[in-house]
Image (cartoon, rainbow, N blue to C red; front, top):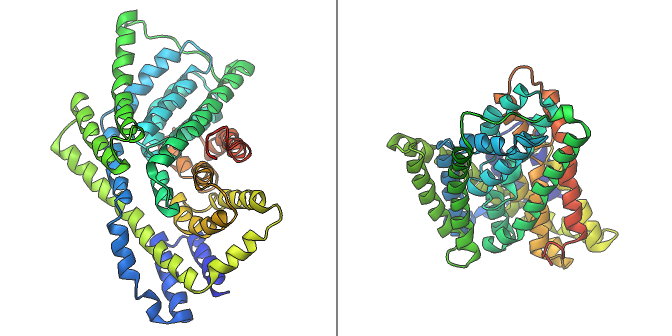
Length: 428
């Protein structure tokens, strides 16, 4: 039972607010030494070396660098302005353009914080100006900004690929359809709300300073460059021309080319993007090292056998296990970050899923879609904090909480559909 006690001790410390990496490493050290003595960590250096030599994980800093460079090119700003004008004549057009820009930013940057902040700074004031309902505006921005978790290239998909031993290219391909369905569900919800309650999502006037030709030329010039980068990065993976790591490097170069095209390139910008990339990457890998020590101590103290025995004997077999695991991940997502869940909870669940004959690709996409919800769920959803940090004073935290609720329900419905109809999504 030491492993189970260790798990709940780590969870309690995370909820109290201890740093994630130190929590995992410290709890593992204390309980591992108490249970097995210091020799339990004799092979830890080899595990650390294996992590640092992992070619798949090399894609993480490269995709982060690509996203941060694009964040500094005014890409989101120009996209939102152009898309807002394109769909402005439609009820809910600004919200629709926000979702579409969020999907495009997700496929080109994959950085949730950057997407939410950019759209919060640009789209939210415009929505408020044209009397959009505050809750609808906030929910749309938060939900659109989190699309980077399921639409490839996604950091969480890379991490899940490594944890579950699935080729990242296969995960990227498998995530395209669920991501597209989720975007479609968001759009349908906005259109229905705009039709049922026009006052919540009114139309906006078109910019009369541009003639039709200039208008469409501006829209194309804003949309084509990031779309081309998406096609290059994902197309090279899907066509088998490049591995995910190689395509991530290609994406980094492409981001620098876009910075030149947008006249935002400078040595200072590259330095700042590099430093920020190192900070984010160090955070991810510190958590990974702590989680590695934790999972090793958890296994050596017999915790994995207890979990496997309990979960494999659940009523309903594979279906019962899937339902319970998805509920557990959803609830944990209210309180802890997706990285901790991916590194700690998923390795515990994966052997049981394999034992029950659940397709790894199906299981991974279910987890990825579920983990995306963790960015929206109060009280600790990161997207909620990002938006609150840049929102006008008249937008309260409760407005944001209420606004994301319909989008959380949509995500849960999509998770259920993937669970019930995996063959429709091509996952089994």
